[in-house]
Image (cartoon, rainbow, N blue to C red; front, side, top):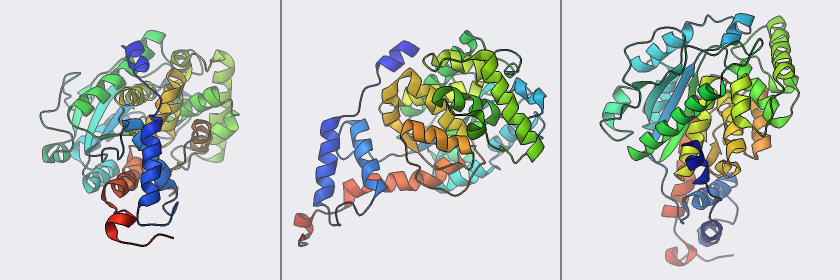
Length: 368
């Protein structure tokens, strides 16, 4: 399934991109006056293979959740059971991601790929929505999919976090969720994540794929003090020295130092890219997963849109490596999909320009 997915990922359509640039030159605005929005709309035309590209709606947020054995190294002050408790909050509609999703008209799907503690009653793995993504019932009642691979990863500072088979199972879960959401009508997917301690494996993934020093790839996560931060950097550095992950083997990197939610997010991105559907990336967890997706299939980057610049320094390292410009920069570091949701209207607006703005000829406006 992974090989089938990656083989379906193609480069952007150059003719569609050229048509989008030409159309921009005829719209009633100075050339280049919309800055990055023009570049984004051209990229989305290339992804869709048509100009103008489809308006990216409705939107579907997929929150992948998992726990981490490295939590035992005291890299965060938050107790591990918070992961499961926050899933309950997502399902009750009480988290920040829910508020932003209601504002944006986006559906929320929570996927347990490896939570350590018991969850609220889940739906069977692979269950399908009864209505299209973004419908009123989806917005009112976020749904939970039980696709647990194992109850949390192993401690990456001691041994490999996952076996290759476990990492692959998580990646394929992400691919299946992407297919399900797109089949249900989603026009754009948004990445979400939940997992206490998950910025530590994210930092390890970013350092492994980019070659960055762990000090530059590691942030303070939920806001640790100086002593805990220095310890966290040391844990990441030691894990990389122990496993020496090879960036040309993305599955091996995910298995050695990744998390189940990171692997599943990589699969979601690959699944969307294979379906030529844009993926709006959230913060540092998402971009660390995006590095893995790009290692599996370099052309998958064409489907990626960087929603925001996370306050976590590793996010900037990863975005630079991917060649992606973030749409907004608000100092966010919450995760869940919150930054991606705030950036969603920017993406939609970029495409609507190509659909709805008059040309100089049609509007009877004189050109320069």
